[in-house]
Length: 129
Image 1 (cartoon, helix red, strand yellow):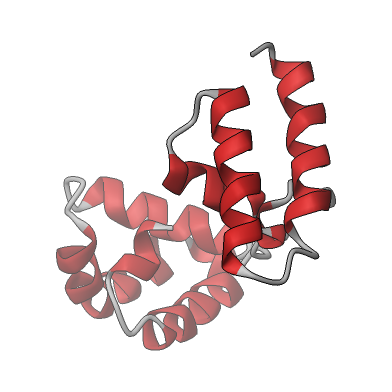
Image 2 (cartoon, rainbow, N blue to C red):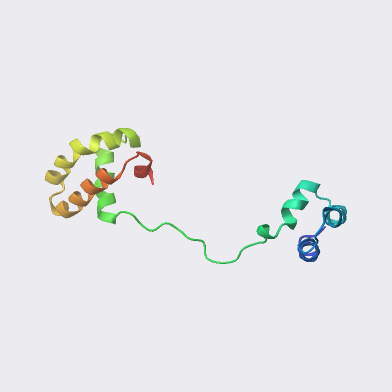
């Protein structure tokens, strides 16, 4: 079936399937839908359930956790350390932050934020984000 015709048929079958009370009636509707669409029964059940209707709206995203300056300090420390993986970088941060304070003089406030960031990172995966 063509995409647009299938969408229309799916909408029509959903309207029939939702109010059907007994299993026999739902089974007949499902068989008819599978015959028209060519889909397998289990996938037909999945499509006909009301929870699987396409959702419209804005996708929620996680906000920015760190300032760009703090990320810059971490990035420079990461580069200077020879690009270690997150687990090793997390272990190195307590030793590298005094170096960063001396070497990157103008961003001491961001370095303090990075210290708090290091304490907040309970897992190395947080640094990879």
